[in-house]
Amino acid sequence: MTDAVLSFALLGALLTITPGLDTALVLRAAVTMGRGPAFATALGIGAGALAWGAAAAVGASALLAASIVGYTILRVAGAAYMIFLGVRMIAAALRRGGRAAEAGTAKIVPTFWSTFGRGFLTNLLNPKVGAFYLAVIPQFVPEGADPLATGLVLALVHDVEGLLWFAAIIMGAQAARGFLARRAVRRTVDAGTGAVLLGFGVRLGLSSQ
Image (cartoon, rainbow, N blue to C red; front, side):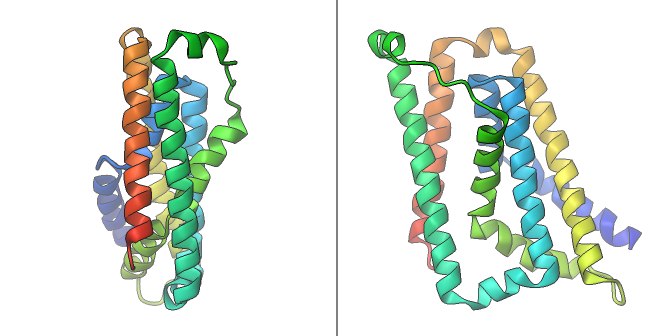
């Protein structure tokens, strides 16, 4: 069991530090909203990944993979949500570019649940995350071990690694807050993250598997 956890932890660490959608979301939250919303976003992402890990452990992901209709519904819903978020972020970046728009637009204060929910739904509605856990976790379950317990432990290990990585990103963003607080930088981060989300959403929507 220990060898399986350590081997999975190494793989999970390599995947965690690879730049992707989750990292972009947390960095964007840290730059545009601050440390609290960024940590809430990270916790939401972790909760979504843990839910997929649990689903893979009990075989729910296998059922989803076998159901073309179920997978298609989840894929389309996930694509639509990512495109929606991407368009909103790009629109926010464009609004920040105009003085009148910025002066006349009421500032929306992010809450824990709104930012947590954004991270959670982004992961939960991404069938590619489920496919990863379905393909990888069973390979690390030792013979004779309880699949559910082992799968949950492995998913939790990956979650902890992700939270540590996100914490480093958030702390780094806070250390550079003088530079990152500039309007042009925040606008660029919003536009860049929105473009990433939009790209992921379009690619997921056009994907056949």
